[in-house]
Every structure is written in C-alpha cells, then in structure tokens.
Image (cartoon, rainbow, N blue to C red; front, side, top):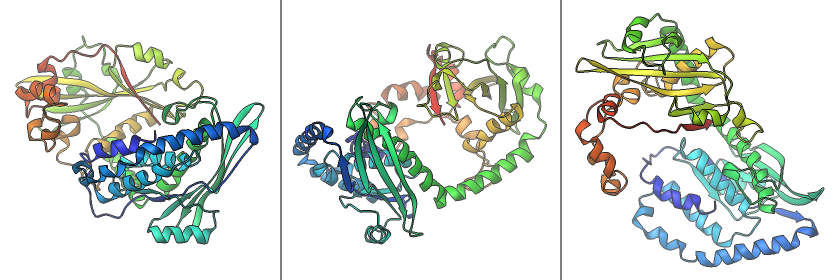
Length: 446
C-alpha cells in the first residue's frame, strides 16, 4: 500500500485538467504523538522497526523522479503531495504508517471527485491543543488538520488491539469536527485495508478502516462543492419527477421495437420511456422485484453481463454477499439506423427501495448522471441524445493521448473501431458482431 499513490500519481497525469480553483479538500496529516504499548509487544515492534529501517535504506534515489517529464507534467498540488510523501517515507517508522496509510486512502477516495485536492503528510506531532493545531493549519495554509494524539496497543483474551485517538480540526471554525477513539483488532478485514492476520499492522488497519470513513463523511458534509451539488441535485429531482416521470409516454412505440423472442427483456416491466423528437432514438425504464439470490447465483447467471449492486450494508458485514437486494431495474436504449432498430439492455442494477414506486423514481433519477441536464443547471441538455447513453464511436487516433497509448493499449481497439467511427455505439457493437462474455461482471457499491 505504501507505494500505491506514488506510482498511480504518474498515471493520473493523463486524466487531470488542472484549474486555478482553491484546493479541495485541504488536509494536513500529522504523525502519531504519544505511543504506548504493553511489554509483550516489544519483540514484534523491534522486528517491524528493523523492517522499516531496511526498507528506508533503498529510498535514497526517489527524489530523482522529480526531474522526469512525467512528474513535471503533474499539476502543482500532485507534485507537492508526492514530494511530501517521499520525504515522509524516507524516515517512516512502524507507528508512522498510521499517517501514511491515512494519506494513501484519503487521496484515493477523494481524487475522483476532487482532482484538485491537497493532502499533505507532516512529521510534526501534536497533543491536540487547539491553538497548536490552528497554528499548523495557518502555517501550511490548509483547512483541516488530521491528528493522532495517542496510539496504544494492548492485549485482551490473547488478542491484540490498537486504540487510536483521532482528531479532525477545522481551521475555518477553529473547532474539532472529530475527537474520537477507535479500537481495531488483529483480524484481517480484507478489501482496501487487507493485512496479515494476527499482527499489530492489522490492528492499525482495522482502527483506520472505521476512522477514515468518518473523516470522509465529515469533510464531505463541510464541502462547499458538495453542498452546491446537493442543492442542484434536489432541484433536478423535482424537475425529473414533475415534468418527466409523471408524464404519459408512448409505451407501444417501445414495445413494438422489442421482439417477443427476446426473453431477457420483459416489456410488462416497462414503467417510463423517452423518445427523441425525430423518433429515431428511445430509452425505456424497467423495474420489478426479483427472487432472493446470493452473489454466487448472480455471478453464474448468464442473463446479464454487467450488473451493479447497490446495498445499504457494508461490504465487510457478515452475510453481505449472501443477500442481494431484490429491486431489479435496467434500461433499454435504441437507435434507428438505415431503417432498422438496434437496441441494448444496459445499466442493470439491484438496489434497495421502500416500494416499487419509490424504486421506479429512484432509478429514473439516474438521468442526472446520464447528461440529461446542462452542467450546473436544471435545463434540458440538447446533447442528451448524442452523448452518454447514445455515445458514438470515436477515432482514437485523434485522442490527445494517442502517442502514449496508441501502439500499446489501444491498438487492437482502434483497428476494430475504424470501420465504425462516427456511428452510434449501440449500432456498431451489433454490426461488429462482438461475442458476448460468458461471465457476469459485477460492481458493488453503497
């Protein structure tokens, strides 16, 4: 995990368009202040410190990476984060991994939404005094300070635990948004916080797995960007509900296009649809309650090849994979090309809903994510029928990154796409005769 962000940062250079907007979020992460542990841990800690020191010996040349073209293409915030990361990594000890893991995870979680983030590691320690935290925030010109005033390792009934005190200071209000203690055991939690079972490293991973999620929620709740988006989201939902969801639609238009021989689409589950003004495109919304099934059943079912599962449960909860939500929804989108209709079932989703009516509106609201509205507006986007759901095959040779990926990653795809450039993807896929995968790809989210 320690090398992940340093390596991935170079890949991000192809995705980032740096702007002059204020950094968000801005977080300074301090080193654990007071560390206490039972005598029984002395041997394991000595061994771990030895491993960290030996690892540090091979890091003396990392600064040379700052002179590479890839690094210099990075925006200023990413450059600064990497420099701080390398500096911290050179002198890190076993306890310092608390801060390092926190920076890695927070950067990973925030980056997709906030590429203009600024999360910096610091070797400074603090008891948690507000005046001291305020000075650190002022000196670094950052809004938040993440502090670990105390880290303690102890044993109970033969099992090891870490007790981690966590503070999140907000310089804007000169107050603590969090001042909480988290306890983690030594059982491998898996997923992002996977660790070697029955080790002190695992106790750190477990305590952080709870703490960092709380930190993300606190920062998100205070984000000006997310607050503004929440207001727009609500206004758009109102528009979708009153102007579109409750509006009658030509059900027969869509039903006539989908043949009865297609048993993978049940037209009786069609509850709303939209048709372009020239009647050459449509999107229909379908929903029903499915039978109870588990992850294994869903994975081996050949009915749908790409499935999203949205669950209110935590993926680490017992029985999570054995209880798939039963509200089953999908869309069918179609394009008329040279007098023939081409359609595709997509965006198959299992999720939780209070009832069918609530589920229908909830799924219909996905239009917000499908380019239905103009940016930061409740006005209908005139490009809706030409983008997202109705995207066209692009000429990869005209992509700015063609020189970087053209002869390696994109070569096969570009050759396959060449005869269909400018054509709707729905049409191109079927004309190309792509063979469907025999396995189901499943995405799980909360």
